[in-house]
Length: 442
Image 1: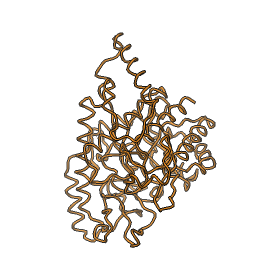
Image 2: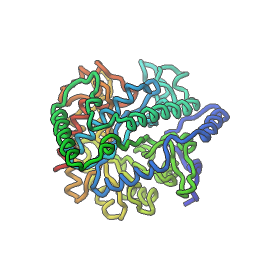
Image 3: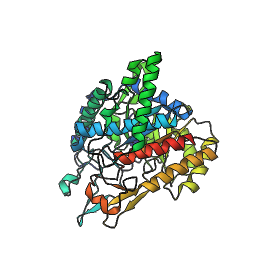
Image 4: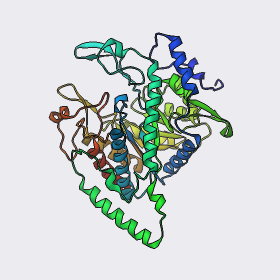
């Protein structure tokens, strides 16, 4: 294995990378990014590693959720607050119902790029380069917008910075205070989840009792840990945000607290794993139908040779019809090693469908089915599922069918706003949290 440095990935084949036409413009952007202040600090990254280690040991539960792909135009206070609100609501439901503290990680403040299956796509009858996320090109249906633009990396950095600034202000300013959960109400919600109202009443009664006994400090309930994540896809951008931290004697990617590698880019001899093996951040690995037991064990040895708790989260994503056959052999293979991994379930990406009108959608029932099967398979194998990874939004979108609102394919066009994949809306997300909490209790 060659010695690692932040640019050693360049010696390996790199999948899903755009081609920039002006190398000097690209280098100018990267040089500026290297001089910019970090978006997160190493102490926060290390704090998350510790919490994920506790989740791997069964003492916490990971809730990771947010946009499929953030768009620059959605860097608005109401959109940011909406995502935080729904994650807070879900975490209350999970903690109260599942009886475990929740580690909150947003797909936010950096999730600006998406891998694509094909280099081109048909848009209104025209074949155009595929939209790869605002970090790389534009969603507008014309050749100029679809051309990869290195300047978008700077735009992504500043939009991530603005998003993080607002998130930090909200969490430090009492927005997450359990004494005032009414602040978390989602404006324009498409439905109600009655169990949430009952849960809030029970939480308030418990807080009143504990505070009367003097058993809880108020400031503990007023602030929360909230971490950010995105897929490590555009490697020049990730390299530019990588910093050497002398006191830790380690490199950190300081563009997010944790990064994940996708199903399409986790080749053992590929550039993405080469980059990720050298940074101190906790790493997520999407594990889908193409994974084999041998590949997964080799990948763990590659990314985590020291077997460090909190380092690796394996995120299964098979689909409701494939998980029964695919997950057990992988669980058995990992159990045969001494890797202390955290298992999470992404029930979204394996359950895609297309409506009669050509819109991408996902069925709530299929999402729930994969989650339920994941819990059951882990229990049967003597393992435990320690987290979920969900694409969601706080907005009243109609992108996934089903749920208590009974959304059908006919409803999709009412509020279909995603630039890539369909997301659960606020009501569906909260409903899902209560169902997960019930599964956590067995």
